[in-house]
Image (cartoon, rainbow, N blue to C red; front, top):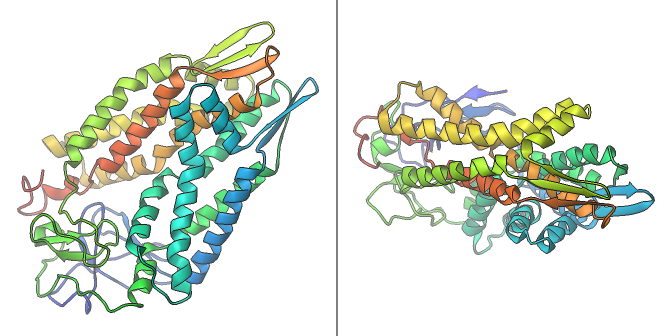
Length: 438
């Protein structure tokens, strides 16, 4: 059940008496309101989620993190697919597919795939275990804040669900050529995907920080006796919000750090708009080569087939897999272009104050954040096919030059989305903010 957090009239009471919560998308300040079980507090201005009901315990999150860690190890040890062509078997693991890509000269692409499918999940889970295990034992570990920052940074790059969809697309493509079956690694990957989904709900940073704060002498935040008017943003009230732990502190110029986690505090993300624009223009430059050049070559004893992204979609459609053809088309063609256009529109809305309702702008940004990683689908399919279809002159799959360009599009658009500070969308309507931190 979703519950709007509608208590916005923040008084001048100290933060430890009346906790404040600032929306990370529009900067509106709210009271920390108690919620019913399984409820969510949503921002009253832009609709973004502020926090959950906190019904999950450290024990729950720790159990899921331990389960995910075990599944992550096993999923990397067992093969994902077994392919048989004229009596010859071939299998591949996630790491094996990455290694084959590196051997074929696609070192950068192999590193990207290893990062998204192996390293980012391992780093995120290690960080979660590092903070949850001591909390369960009632202890504080050094580097707690750094571990929490690391977990937050890794979350957008964990792409196990995209990898599993790539396994499904590869399965359909291989089924037209020989005998193919999903092996233990694929089922372990599905289990890992489901456990990670549960962990994403159970691991609530707000709950983890509060559990950690309960083990130490509280650090008094620098928010006292500051009257904040109704519907005010944090920046309009000279309050800085920590992007890591959410603590609200008084803004006293540059160089300030959060009293709880030590992260640098800024009213707005420094150079957000210029960095986003630079990344966006670069991604637009490589988008067209990524779609026009050959992304995959399929060799057989009698022919060599060269596929672009669109020809691969057409192949799936003609082979009767219209649903997968639509998924690949949306993930590999539509989503990257829409991400570029959507971020371009948002930049224009900030720069020229286009008459687009701000709530719609906020929803557009949240959509860009959600769909960003699904563009990796084609790269996972190429890696799996390259690794499993390697029968010399009889049959082989090779990545084409467009694969690197397409990987660059995915990374650049994700970095552009993370560089854009959505709070700029609301600054013009907040009194006194226009032009202060552009």
